[in-house]
Amino acid sequence: MAEPLTRQRIDKWLWAARFYKTRALAVDEIERGRVQLGGSNVKPAREIKPGDVVTLRQGAVARTVVVRGLSPMRGPAPVAQQLYEETPDSIAAREQAAATRRLAPEPAHAIAQGRPTKRDRRAIDGQRRDGWGDRWSAGLDE
Image 1 (cartoon, helix red, strand yellow):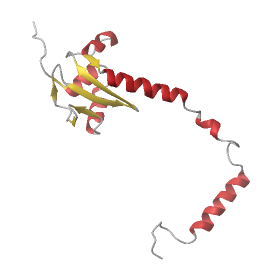
Image 2 (image 1 turned 180 degrees about the horizontal axis):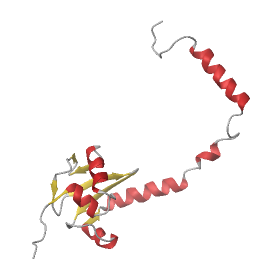
Image 3 (image 1 turned 120 degrees about the vertical axis):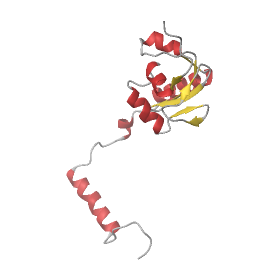
Image 4 (image 1 turned 90 degrees about the vertical axis):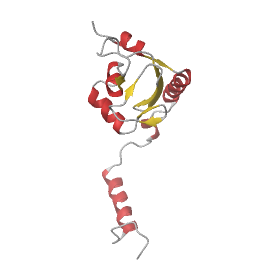
C-alpha cells in the first residue's frame, strides 16, 4: 500500500486541484509569475505541503488559497475542492470583482454611430497623414 503524500510539486498540485486544465498550462502560469507561494515567485518543481499559502491568477481573477491536501491524481471537482481552502479575503475580493463586472456598462453601447463609413475612414486617414507628415518615428529630434 502506498504511503500518503507529504510533499508534491506545485505544478502537479495546481493541476490536481483543477485550477488549470493541464500541467503544461500550470507550468506556463508559474513561469509567467502568476503563481506565488508565500508571497514569492516559484518554479514548477517547487514542492508544497499542507498549510502553504498559494496565490494565483486565473485570467483577471486573483485567488489566495491554503493547501489542505495533496493528491497524486486529478479527480472530480468535489474531490479537488477538498485539496484547498480559499481565504475569506480572497472570496470577498472575487465576489466584489464579479459584482463590478456585472454592473459595468456594455462597451458596445458607448459607440454612438457604429462603424465609420468609407467617407469617415478616409477623413481619419487624411488627418493621420497630415499630422505625421514625413516623420517615421515619434522622436522629438527634427
